[in-house]
Length: 327
Image (cartoon, rainbow, N blue to C red; front, side, top):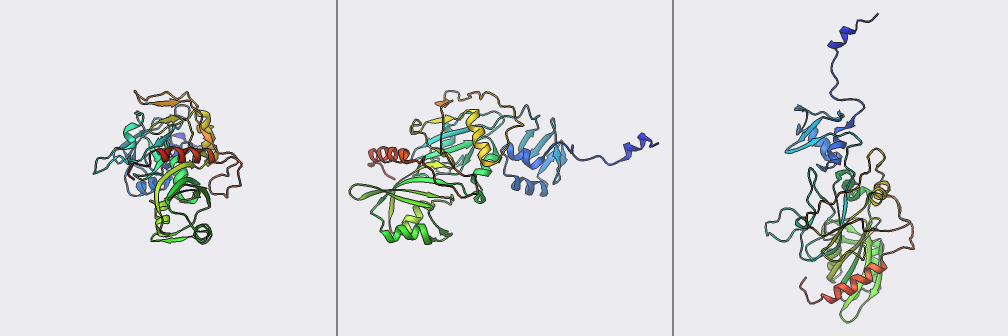
């Protein structure tokens, strides 16, 4: 018969084998992507209950993680906060950054205040670009939507000074345009017409390089005078969200997004989202405008009967009224 007292001399496992992997917990808390957290762990920048974390380590309810200056308390599955997702209609003249040496207006200044979490911007729009911005409290969801390997579709309404030739339209959708940081090719490009010197186009691409749309048109000798993002993945910019306004998605809509990117929400208790706007103009419960028949991230998208044509028409009408503003 085995002496049970001998078991006290056995090595203690660094974490519960039934817990969650530490990099996943940190990613869900918005500290960084899973890969980044693995690098932090290897570099000794993460501790669990005051002890250095190791790769492959699992943590359970009650454990306290510290990654640099961020502290994360591990909760049970039922206590985890359901990811929050916020849609914002960005205006020109706003920057998508928390730190700006020029002290320009930041979109983060307008978002609802959070306790123990932070808003993560899913992609960016440059200073002179308007349209759909998505924010979430889930680092893992943000990574799924931003990582290049998932090839999330972005759709834009763009107004340029001049008209593209048939050869230019063919080149940018078939061969691609060589930029200093690599080739860019639009997955879709349609002529939306225009009056006088200004002409509208609608385009779709699957990457988010810095100023990629503007730089592509510049390479063709055309200047972009207005640029608006009308869709990101399955989410269209709802016509009901006016410029400078925002709307928080309900748990059902967030669940649809989680399912679309392949993240399970079954282990998380879906709670009613509490509006912590503190005076901010947030419409919690307004329905999102989802694109139907859209493929999962990383797969080729099938043709869809539901498009962003309505959003593009509104973009043309709305941006046209403000054409006197500087870009």
